[in-house]
Length: 155
Image (tube, rainbow, N blue to C red; front, side, top):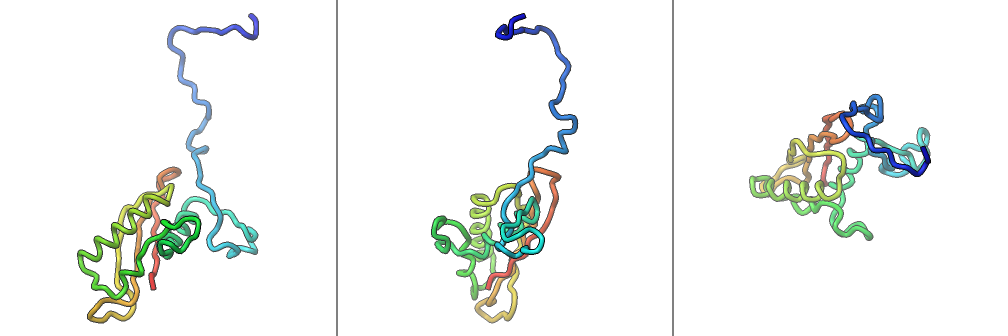
């Protein structure tokens, strides 16, 4: 048979996976550790993170950044500081939730939000608290569906 001829097979062929154990080869998400240089002894200045650690750092960075702070990504971040000193009622909570979820869905890849909680943190006066504590319960989408939490304090 010549190398350029096409072979046509009729009938049922048994399914043969290309990989023996597909669970071993699921994608992992890789990225740089945040903040840069925090793991100089273990990974160098540009240390690499994966999965939970990477997403935890990315969510922390997203929640602590105000929109307009990043020059090349002016829409990156959440404007959570505008909610400081406001009463934490249902209206304020819904606005915070919308702010976080819209930014999360736009910029975070590889995880989904299972639960979102917002607490006043620090001294609480009649107009509200001077800082907020945001707790997100997240689940990895790809690998092993690990559930983890991220706590961020907004001052």
